[in-house]
Structures are given as C-alpha cells and as structure tokens.
Image 1: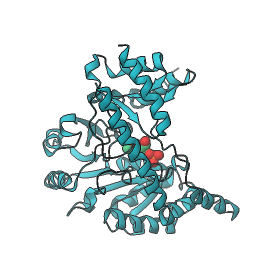
Image 2: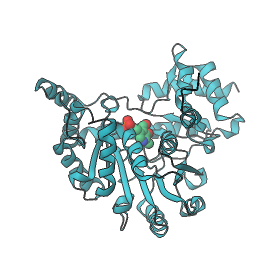
Image 3: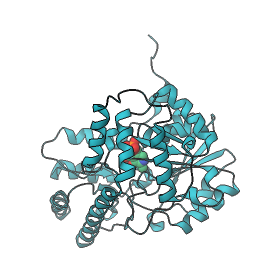
Image 4: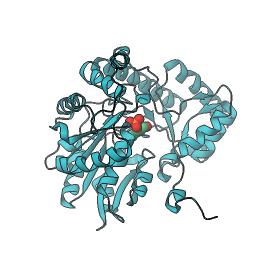
Length: 384
Ligand SMILES: Cc1ncc(COP(=O)(O)O)c(C=O)c1O
C-alpha cells in the first residue's frame, strides 16, 4: 500500500506545547501555569447576546466575510484603538486569529517566497508558512534587546526572496512589546526592501506601559500590512473561535475567497456576541487588564525574591524567566518540575530554539493559584 500521507505535512513538527500538556494530563493534581487562555469567563452580557441570537433563530450562515454590522464595528474599533481607517470590505471575520494567520499566508505566498519569523513566537506561523508553500526564515530575538525586533536583526534575515515579515507583538511567549519609535525603524526597512507585514495584534488590549501601537498606523505601512486580531484574549472568548484580519482590499478579497471555500462563514452565534463585545465590552477588557497587571507585578516581585532573573514583560499574559543558572535545559527543568512538584510550565524551546534557557509562565491564573505554584517552584529550586 502506498503512503497515504503528504510528505510535507509529515515533516511538520507537532506543537511543543501540546507534547508537554499530554505529559501533564496523565498526572493528578497538576498546578498549571501553562495555558495561554484567559481564566475569566466571557462577560455575561456578551454571552447573553449569543443566547439571544439563538432564541431569535439566527442559526444560518452569514455573509462569507462576516456579518456587515460586525465588520462595521471592527472598523470603528480599529479606528479608535490603532488609528487606522478600514472599510467593511477590508475585513474578513475568521475562525479565531488562527484562521486569519493561515489565510494571510495562503493569499500572499508563492512557492519559495521567504517569510521572516522572529522567534521566540507563537507556534503556528512556521507551519502555516510551510503549508502555504512558503519558506520560513527564523531570526532569533535576544533578552539583551528585551526580545524586540531590531532593524539589524531584520536586515540579517532578508534575502532577495523575502516577501513578508511576521511582527508578533505584544509577544507570546516573552510579553515583549514594540514602541512607536522602534516600529518606525522597522517600517523604514520594510518600505525600503518592498516587503509586507503580518502584524499579529491579538494581545493588543493587554499592554501595561501605554497604549499598543500598530505598525499599520505608520506612514506608508497600511498598504503593506495585514493586521490580525480577535476576541479570544481581550474579551476572554477563546471557545467562541472568532477573529479577523484587516488589510488592503486586494489581499482581503483573496482571503475571503479562501475562507469561502474552507469555512463558508465564521460561527454565527459568535459573530452576534462579538458585536456586543466591541460595542459594550471595553469596560470588561479594562477590568481584566487591571487584574492581569496585578498578577504580572506579583510574579515580577516573586521572581526577584527567588533570585530568578526575569525580563519585565509589558504585554500579553506571560513572563519568560531565565533559568540558565540552574544548568539544565528548558525541557529538563520543565519536565522535572512537572514530575517532582506537579507544576506545569512550558519550556521556552516550544517557541523556537532561541527559547533555550527560558520558561514560559502564563499568568492567566488567579493570584491564589500563582502563589501555590510559586511556592512549589521555590521548593524545587531549593532542592536542586
Ligand atoms: C500570538 C497569538 N496569535 C494568535 C493566537 C490564536 O488565537 P485564536 O485563534 O484563539 O484567536 C494565539 C493563541 O494563543 C496567540 O498566542
């Protein structure tokens, strides 16, 4: 019998996060600081809107690109939050930011086109580029640069085949953010080299040192950028599976075509709930952001007391402590911590080889849970 599988798909590595969680799922009483999703329930008024839409019998497909009122709300939101003006036909509503990332690469890449992926970063960019026929080119960001993308690093990855750059800020797993000035320096290179940007702004509402800035808002960048965002993180709506891409009409049109054949339309109930989220949910976003910030500060203080160096993150809900001084690999540290103390964290290497020597710790958990986990981490390092 011949091999039923595609060689290309078989060559794609499974996510390092999943592998680690499979280990944890076989254990009792694991305290997890591993998961990248809000611990808050979706705010009640948003859930209620979803329920109401079902009561009204709104159980049909929507327009392929998404409900027009939702796309209009997204445009209004983007104008207000990132100061970029989009029209409704420059938005496609997708199944999470995940589908928007995949669709962007599929719409923009030809075989062999290179895409620069700054690591450490979210796990899906690399396989999505490969599945779209592109060639991922990883560049390693460093703690000494606060895990920001610098123009020098970017230039080091560019060849005559480079077409796109992924800009993953606020960053999962490091929590790094980029300021306007730092983005301006990146935009200069992008324009000079005639490149495009996929700017993953899914954590844009979770910043702790001033407002998020989108590269799309800089002069000359709107037409070169696809902004990815969604409802999972900011509105605590992971299970609703709703996100979107905003970008030049020419690109979005092609993305809608792909989405039409693959998905038809994003979940209808979720789309109605998302309108409520954007129109009336910003106070909830702020409430959750304040809680995350308290946890972030708590963790920073604790790590400093414990003598574990940790770069201060100003975005998302992760910290990325440096564990090099313990003389173990990230994988070994995380595996032993899980086996010996039943605390689950993610090895930094799940987000790229340059994550070696770091752990990703999520603070999408209550202060009480964080305290229990940190006491166990302290016991673990005391016994080393
Ligand atoms: C940086 C980043 N982008 C995109 C996503 C995808 O989120 P979703 O598909 O739930 O919108 C995630 C999820 O963890 C993420 O961390």
